[in-house]
Image 1 (cartoon, one colour):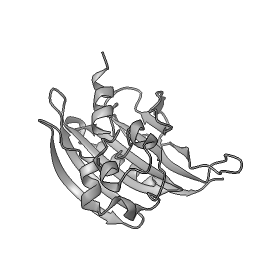
Image 2 (cartoon, rainbow, N blue to C red):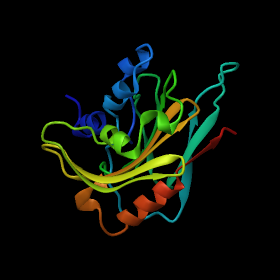
Image 3 (tube, helix red, strand yellow):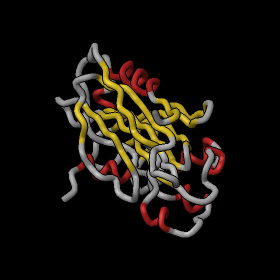
Image 4 (tube, rainbow, N blue to C red):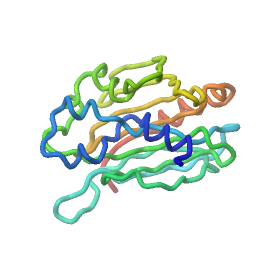
Length: 215
């Protein structure tokens, strides 16, 4: 049986991993893509903010000539956070890090290749349209939206999700399109843990998320 954390990862889905069948389908419409469930977040909660940090880098896109990455996504987490393994499938790449002492707060970057004309943020619609992808409607799942706004080159969402038989979770999700890829960043913690240092850490880690040219 799939662990609860992975069930929620599959259900809520950073905001933005399309299911493999959408990646294989010939020229899906924007409406079809926006209806696809996302592979947002789950796994890990945290103690105090670590004094030291480490920067995580994920390659984005690839050159048709030699396969080298076109861009990269980076974010910083406390130095003692550990990498969690797992293959998101569908040609996607994910770097997921969590506090070593608790499996309910994490940060990850998820890279989903797309084809056709879905090559810009506007290809997926407004911040409100993409919100329906980040927070897909499902029976008995409720969302409390704290923030939903368009910023330069990205959409940013902060929200609380309640999934049946799961604790409430507080998430920050960033949605971007870079080098023919959907780039999703996500930070989350259980709502019951969202106090003390956690809100500040969430803001700091989210603010560290950037994309740029590959080295």
